[in-house]
Image 1 (cartoon, one colour):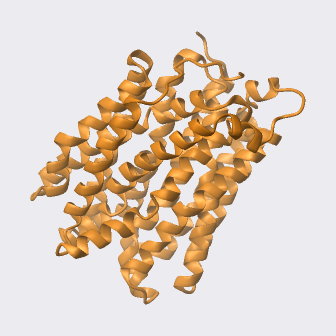
Image 2 (cartoon, rainbow, N blue to C red):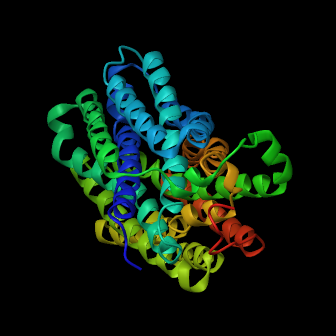
Length: 397
């Protein structure tokens, strides 16, 4: 099937929106040590900034999702991108730890809206046969953003410092011009006519699906954040004594694996089904885990990081299409995003949990990461094996 220019542009816009959103988020995880020193806070308090960002994302998913279901996907996506760009830059001006925590909480609201709105706009626009592959493209925006953050830290951090790194967060605002000129509104949203049912009314009919989705996304968010949040700073810099550039390079290698995994398993889900593709990716985490968490040389650690992120983001690569196909069409901009971000909320304690486990075992962050990731990989396999699938579902009901 021949693609229209708007269909191509919506994939580009949604991918870049999530990429730059993740770029803004992951800059923070490289800065813990220096922020702690300059703002006179311990590592637990600084890591709370990540917890607040994750915890506020469901608020953003609900707020921007409802706006998108009511007023359209395209204008809501534009306002959302502008909001997280401005709030990221504002973080660099924080005069105290308390102010920074407030800024990161507000950033979390803006960050929480992008995924649900962008994925709904995309899945409602593209051809049905392309959903699996495009799902992988959308989700690898997350490791792509992490990769860009790693690259930015590698190139600029030692010269600019943490405050100026936050200023790079204004870059996503440039995407607004592309969306305004090159992206059309969702055809499925335009076809909806008459009074739109309320969120509570729809959830009353689909409450079992909602609960299942939240539990699944909680496990998925422990899977991703359990393998990423402590990795560049606490695992590589604190435990293995890597310098900033070496840690950034190692993290970039991990995210190349993540991009590869997301694309491969997203496309594979179109052939073998969403559930089978997710389970295959999650199982792949087990042989990668010893190299990733307990390696003793840079080469072994890099290999483990590459393989682990194939597994993590391979499973995640199926999620955009899987949640959008499961979603009630009346609230598609709201349902996947809120389900996803509520999972984030419940998994927001991940970094603090891993810090606590590590400190109880002689600051062994590798052990802490292995415990969390190994456990949730098994949980994901079980949840998906007994869960629903609606591959190829009509997006307009």
